[in-house]
Length: 66
Image (cartoon, rainbow, N blue to C red; front, side):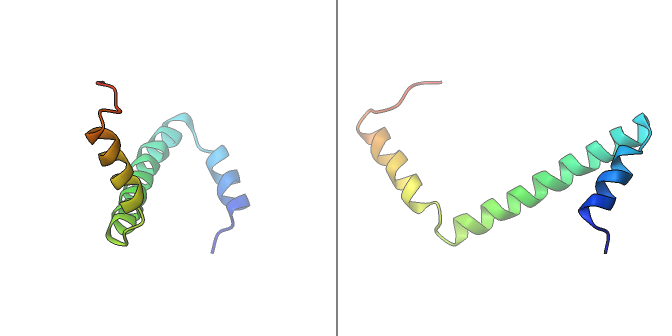
């Protein structure tokens, strides 16, 4: 398996065009990973307390219109 050090070196040697291609791929990859983690956290109930606090604040009128 490639090390982070090797990966950093390889990325630093990409041409501007290939770096743009890599950035585009990585942005999508990272977003997918984040979405999956968020979904898993929601399913596991890890955000229940925060969600309940937000709902209580809303019911008390403790919020700002965006």
